Image 1 (tube, rainbow, N blue to C red):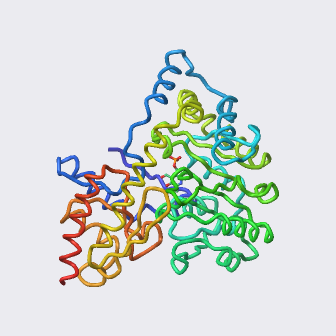
Image 2 (cartoon, helix red, strand yellow):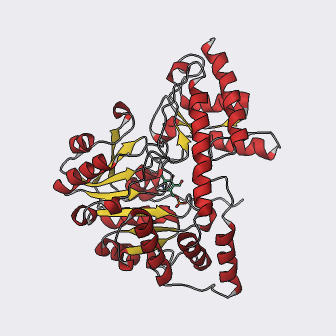
Image 3 (cartoon, rainbow, N blue to C red):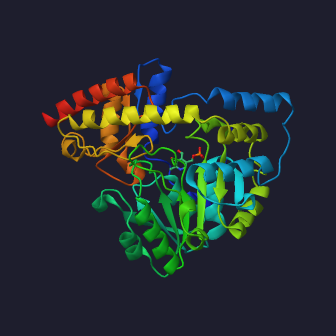
Amino acid sequence: MTQSHFKESIYVSEMEVSATLAVLMEAERLRKEGVDLIDLGAGEPDFPTPRNIKDAGEQAIESNFTRYTATSGIAPLRQAIVDMMRRDFGTSYDPSEVVVTVGGKQAIFNAMGTLLNPGDEVLIPSPYWVTFPEIAKFFRARPVIIDTEPDDFLLTARAVSNAIGPRTRLLIINSPNNPTGRIIPPDEFRKIAEVAAERDVWIISDECYLYFAYPPAVPFTAGQLSEDLRSRVMICGSFSKSYAMTGWRLGFGLGPKPWIQSMLKVQSHSTSNANSMAQKAAIEAATGQQDSLRAMIGEYKRRRDWVVPALNAIEGIECAMPEGAFYVMPNMKRLLGGRVRDSIELSKLLLDDARVVVTAGSAFGMEGYIRISYANSLEAIQEGVRRIGEVAGKLSGR
Ligand code: PLP
């Protein structure tokens, strides 16, 4: 290997490598050795992409739809996204208010990069998806964390109001939430948007789990806010989770035209456009039959309904019933403090002793908890929870 004097830029030097990486790398190593692991760490659907969507992608390749597209995404897809949001949530956007991106992540990155100036503050409710604070830092902005634990992990207008200061420029909302699975009730969502508007704060609404709301909970998108409030919100959406398309890398930004235009500028000088075949597949996802989406949602609900009581039946674990996404975040505090000090050590123990992969709460800025993903078969979840119970039994008998 050649020696290198590479020194990374100031933009990246403050970026943190995920604390959970060591556990994930160990899991990867064990998997390669053929060890039987139960993976409750996954952040993606365990289902294959539905057949009709795959067919549309194949058809795009066969018909040589393999060239650059418009930076904003092809017009039929932008129209399909607008129509999908109208059909499912009653919103009314114009296709000029859409940019198709390389996954929801690129929409979030570009939305932040086009809004933030050095020294601006970004309100990030914790627990948070780890990418939010790291992108803020990349643009020399300062993450300001709002702890939602005292409010049962629901962001409130009061907490937002208390956190806004003279330098606050942006609030990030992620509902349904990764990692808690909680959904902000529509009335509170409106109040939050009002508080932000009164204080001249913009909003990114990360809605990549929008469809994952289990009855009686209903999904709520920022697109359902009044025209006035909505004009300060960039929705960052994704096909990754709803249509089991994580690898296709297809997402979108939906928001005020000037903000979209600015994001287009950045995109035209970075990725140019989202993958052309994936765009065709996404049209089918948005406009084709929705049976597989409904079936997946039904299956996730069945798993959630099993996993929450099963975790609560384990001595030392408390788990609230979340309304959506495909995660639960049990409180493990009663098992910590002795042999195992924190959530990272607990996730390591679960991997070493029980061969179960979970994500430590500290990865989301929330010590004392772990995140369990139920994007795995019910059989695997049942075996995983049984093994977690065994480890918990040993710890509580310490
Ligand atoms: N936002 C949240 C909260 C996520 O969990 C993820 C993926 O894990 C994303 C956004 C981005 O997903 P993608 O870029 O695949 O659309």
